[in-house]
Image (cartoon, rainbow, N blue to C red; front, side):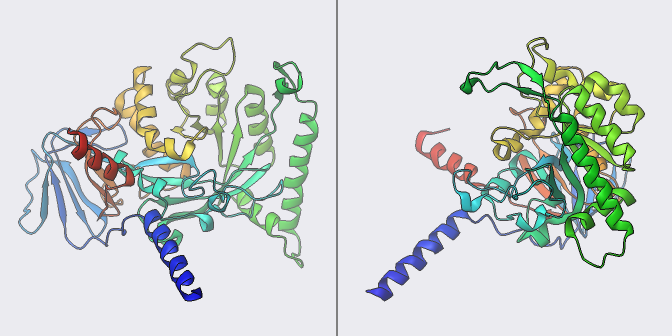
Length: 434
């Protein structure tokens, strides 16, 4: 009987494992592939109406106009993409994909650590490459992303991954790219459930919280210059901010908070600064431009936060920042952020309706994101010698009605577009008819 119980447990665990695992990652590219006839959206604002794109050994060997290029393709696998569109793989900024599988299951949640200052916490080692949520990104062209910890004043260190891997080591494109800090809010809302006025009021502890941050940064610099007889991992992790090897990502929304955060970082000698969220960033766009500060702009599909804001305030922020010359990418944090990350291209599409061109909107989730994260030497655009990370869509990838992928490649590997959602779609299409 005991043996039978053990067998049942093993079978149960096996069923869970099989139920939660994703497709086997695609093998390394072994043959040369040519994509012919598609409209190629390069990711830097340029478009080639009739393109030829050749991939070899995971890299882009040719990106050219097919009408003026004569290339022998007899030894290549040719994909006829006439009438279709080719895009660089979309990149999720400030994401938590792979850190939580089921919100209600505590054991599958590795989003944050206890404590206030955790710059040494590395999100990459908690990344679950077999997440079913991660694989659901690929059918919309979302192929890369930044894995970011949450919580505390300094949450930890992010890394960049690709979304078709056996494990976190295989997934990693760039490890420990930057440290994420949550700037103190200069205002807070009353707790209505306790009978307090729900309106905004000044944060009476703001100055104290900023001072604590200042002290922590100073202590980190002192440690870096000291003897290091006793190792201090949190202080050690901060060193990259001061020598320029790491990026400082600051979560801040209000105008005062953003301004104070940027001035603070500059005073501490930090040169690589990005504001995350930036609800009022467009109101101080000139300040951000002058200080060479980029913005990972909050989810476009959100409601205005203040009663005096225009109804379309969040829709037009990207246009205002781009017009001011600020480097902007789109992020997806917020309610159900991991699942909603698959809607990244459609957030970019909304910015087109509010002033940006389609190619400018595309840059928000390709080239600009890659530049901010420091991976633009290999990703973000379709250029010769860069990674062959791209996809083919039957229509406009920023339009949910027409973005239907036929192929997706990560480093030249032809990755699966099957997910739990596509399986359900096929299942019930057969039951009820198309």
